[in-house]
Length: 630
Image 1 (cartoon, rainbow, N blue to C red):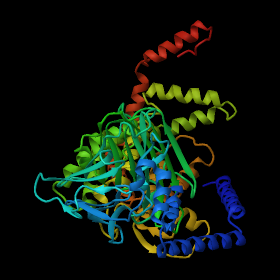
Image 2: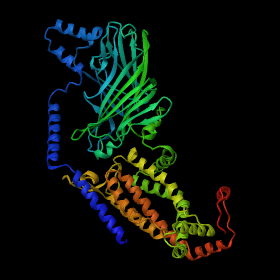
Image 3: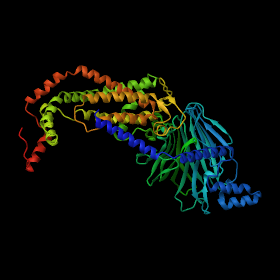
Image 4: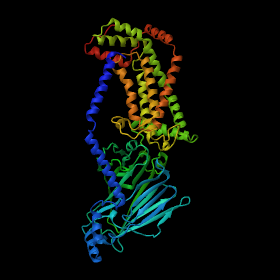
């Protein structure tokens, strides 16, 4: 490393130190932030000790109704607010359970909605029951105007169950059970929610039946708004990493799936308004999802994602307003489905709703590499091997074998450039530095004579980038790796921590984290070795500082990937180690003296011009340029 490079590194380091020092919070700001966090924690504790905070004006109306001691006054108030739905405006919370071997759903009579869902076969990272959502923070129901010019929200009214059975368990192969609740607007007019659950299924059928409602709903309403809102709890180790994959996804009826950006700042929101038809909307976290599916379509959708700041146990708040088309008939049915379950590719695919796209596989060619190569090979190995560390090792070896021809071609190209370096040095010695164009032309002429392409080593490596990106998408969202241990890593789906600390260290805690991931350290070391070997073989003249930058990049990735999946950094470590072994093997096989002799022999052969080169020369002649003599 020359003196200029060292000075450049020192200046970069000083600039970064000055920048972060200037931008770090002052002592007063840190104290204010600490006070704010303590206040939030205190408020949350108080909320646990009292009734849930009123969510909207409807809750306030119920409170007013409850304070009216006179029954006639209460009835009059409810009638003024809800018209023919007034009988459903007063009641008490009751819960009913429907479950099979996979999921357990608590349904509240208030709103007739799923109040909580437990995924029975899985636990959170700290071994607690895995609850997708729970409590009055959720909203789930229809909003519409009645013919009496009343605004009705079914989420805030009390349904009546058709059956008094409070717990329904679906047992036996192929068995199916139903649970129905009705929201009455009159003796023969009601909205009915029918939940149908089959054994061994994460898919809950959800039918909305309008019976005798043709004159109750305002005649100018051709659709109702379905309001769905949910707070997404943290389930995994590493809140930051989990937040990267917690987002809203939706699928157009024309089969195109769209994923909203998961990068939301604390207490800020991202919104999406879709004016076209939507097939389904998914509230997705890293490994589990709740998906509302239309048998036909939703006419349009308005979606909103809001980040929830620590120390809340929730990651984000998701809200969806979905337009559901209706007809003014005496009996009308809206068939829907709800998926409550894991983001497991084959499980999602089995329902034939395009739900497998929820699994983050990337886009374009990366998506197809994951779907048609990585996942099938991974699943095939999983049929015979239960240790996922070994599966990743075998998967890495298989990929390296597939890419072996490209890797060898890249090494051979670098070897050719290396043996030609003395001749390149002669050209540079003959032609002064100020004639850079002549140097380049002479160098390219030499390459043409000996039959070497300067891009020969780059193109094979570029072709491997889609696979590296595919792995970057595959491992952090691979459900199979969740809570699977290997060596010192207790969970391959999140970071492998060998040392942790609680104190907040400026810059380090913000950018690196409060732990050290050993696989990330090993990956960084292996990457530096591969770069060292590549730089030794590289004979091309690099821009000042570029060689140094190649060594800085691994440390940048070390900071970036410290919070990522251990399975991902383990794969990158293995890939680099195999590359190091391949380079040593290639070095022992390739005879550089024999290679140089063949290249020099190529000089004696008549130069063969490509059609592209001939075309360029023809165009140059037409424009009056004189070509150099050969």
